[in-house]
Length: 315
Image: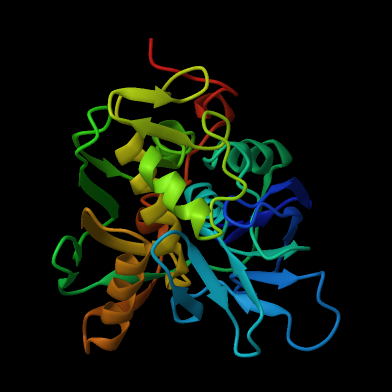
């Protein structure tokens, strides 16, 4: 079989936990899917009507705190960014995700457990070529505080910069080529984070009800850091923002060749960027990947020994 083929999972993979914002328990099962299926979610707890939600940019109900998908029947699933990043970062192009609640389990706040379980179960090749989106011309969107840009590039690259007044975060920046399993090695174990003041504000508004500082989120309060056994990277916050960006970009529906540049950007702005990309005439085109292009996709060449262990912290 030719090696430039689509991938799915070898067998179902199950995850259980609580949602970060709803605090509600959920069981999520990833099933193998055929070529050209893409990624879809199905709410198994809803008996009637259209319960399938395609994992696509045009299904996003834009919010500042997470990525929420909603189908035309109003059925939704939220906080999909970490599992979408894991699927993209492991090179899984096709999967059916069944979930019995409104929000994806937060696990430890990162994508690490998703990556470990999927890779230990195994990836199955499918007899169909990989199709991808190629950014042809630059597209940029911005607000008063933030900017997100997609530039032409022969691979997927992510550059990100954040700047927080919190002493424990400060200004951080990183650029990464996502080829050859770089996501699993360098980003997948970086956890969601927030400021202590944000936690209090979110919980006062009925959000972050499942958040446990140090267990499924890193919380910064000035120079004080609640991070369980400690930070997993000195720049864990900006790495997590890159993880989020990969998950949100995976909603393009196909792998993406382009250079994403985020400056204080978040979920909503990245979705606005994808909407701009697909609405701008001539900004993007679909390509069929030959072996050279396939080798540049996230997840290609990933081996088990490169996946972070259960706990990693800065020395």
